[in-house]
Length: 65
Image 1 (cartoon, rainbow, N blue to C red):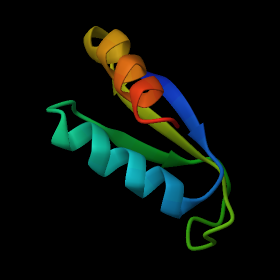
Image 2 (image 1 turned 30 degrees about the horizontal axis):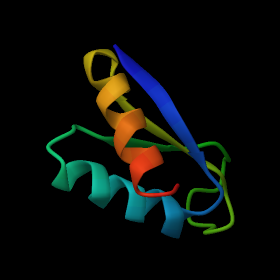
Image 3 (image 1 turned 90 degrees about the vertical axis):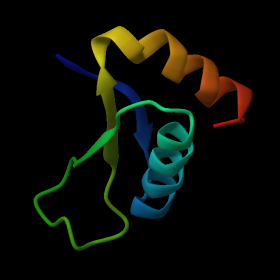
């Protein structure tokens, strides 16, 4: 099951966090919250598998997100 670990305020932030987590070996998916995914001002959910939530939170805190 996928779990939300972060709510990003823009596509740019979501993409940077996605790359950061991928580089740490964590599976990541992004899901836009709005009906207009082309708009960069939308919020995005950053999701990871349930088993990787603690590791993802540690990385997010360590990197200052």
